[in-house]
Amino acid sequence: MAPRWAPPAGLVLLMLLLTPAAVRGDKPLRGGLSGAGKEPEASSAVFPLYGDVYPHGLYYVAMNIGNPPRPYFLDVDTGSDLTWLQCDAPCISCNKVPHPLYRPTKSKLVPCVEQLCASLHGGLTGRHKCDSPHQQCDYEIRYADQGSSIGVLVNDSFALRLANASVVRPSLAFGCGYDQQVGSSSEVAPTDGVLGLGSGSVSLLSQLKHHGITKNVVGHCLSLRGGGFLFFGDDLVPYSRATWTPMARSAFRNYYSPGSASLYFGGRSLGVRPMEVVFDSGSSFTYFAAQPYQALVTALKGDLSRTLKEVSDPSLPLCWKGKKPFKSVLDVKKEFKSIVLTFANGKKALMEIPPENYLIVTKYGNACLGILNGSEVGLKDLNILGDVTMQDQMVIYDNERGQIGWIPTIPFMDLRKVIVGLNSLGSLVFRMKIAQPITAQIKRDYQGKVTAH
Ligand SMILES: *[C@@H]1O[C@H](CO)[C@@H](O)[C@H](O)[C@H]1NC(C)=O
Ligand SMILES: *[C@@H]1O[C@H](CO)[C@@H](O)[C@H](O)[C@H]1NC(C)=O
Ligand SMILES: *[C@@H]1O[C@H](CO)[C@@H](O)[C@H](O)[C@H]1NC(C)=O
Image (cartoon, rainbow, N blue to C red; front, side, top):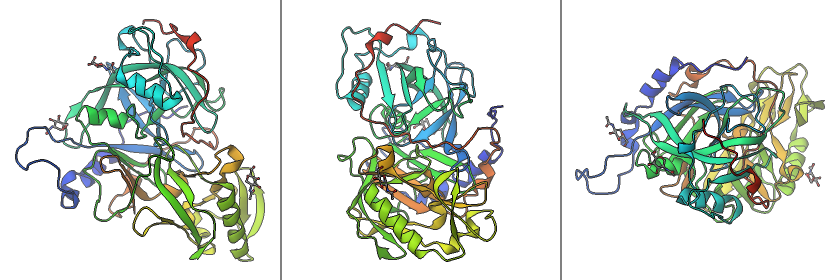
């Protein structure tokens, strides 16, 4: 059985804890003349997250889309721009998903002359083809984990409850995906689609900004115990307390990159070349390129106490067992040192990665390294900080100021309150939702497949 969407009781509490007034003192001055009040102030929206790093391998959000609004589960992905739903257009290849497939109507198709279609094509393939103004906007997106979706851009309303208590229903463009290659097709997929929160203009975030609803800022807290929350807008951002680095946009397209980092383990530099780092909530694990991966593994192994023995575990490539099985990462944390990344772009910005942000304790009671060899999966020189490393921190992607920030979770945010049971989502997912540049042209043969409902 797929989990059913029900408003979690804890959401109310979360909203109270996160009421903008509670952090107002920390807000920067807004631009513009005080009191002039010409434009309505953008608000914020907060959503509970579900899921965990292990065993489910993803964090997702429930969004209400369409008219009447229906709930869909979306994989939260800061590594790509396009939001899409598995879709009955009709569907050529869809997974079993938690909710009935989204059904588009002809009137919801976004024509290819729209600016959003041009920027979507520009971002995905580097070229935009639009032969007649009424032609639909086809897309094909591929991810680093080989998952893909082919579909058309549609435009439908999203029901969003804002922190100022208003409910807004903007029409936002997203993909209606009718041909997917995602995971195994026999199992029920944990989500109905992907929530693309990259910095490109088709990102939901950029569209909300365009509609004047929220600022182009997104943040998340992924709890170590599962669940957490996601927010759009800057009301909750602890500006003065977070660590910030400027975004380095040019290197990796619309990815969120704090630029290049130096790697330390146990206070010692590992002497590797500067690493190009990207923050990606769409990856379950962290990936280091071959050289830093090798250096880290060597340092880790050289440092372990004799109470830990390397063991093979089907969950992950590198695991250790203790005298008795570990129940949680807290049982084994003291045997490992912290990893530290320092960022050349941010003045003295550093990110501490304690053992609980790079180790997983599996159901067999072993401790496994949650940092994987990115070269093995074709990531080349890109280093991805995935969910495992971002747990129990608020991570903020601030496109307004072009900066990325992080701060260990503020203790008063009791994330346990927003956790719901997730018992039947299948096995561990190695997901790497980060959009790949694709060489294949948008598949023209699929044109006209979308039929009116
Ligand atoms: C809340 O914010 C939205 C978006 O800026 C705005 O349209 C709406 O009027 C605000 N509602 C209230 C009650 O202030
Ligand atoms: C989406 O729909 C709204 C309302 O129907 C319309 O105003 C807007 O232009 C549409 N946007 C796109 C990109 O088609
Ligand atoms: C990482 O992957 C690359 C490419 O497959 C391989 O050459 C290298 O030996 C791997 N490193 C380690 C430490 O396993």
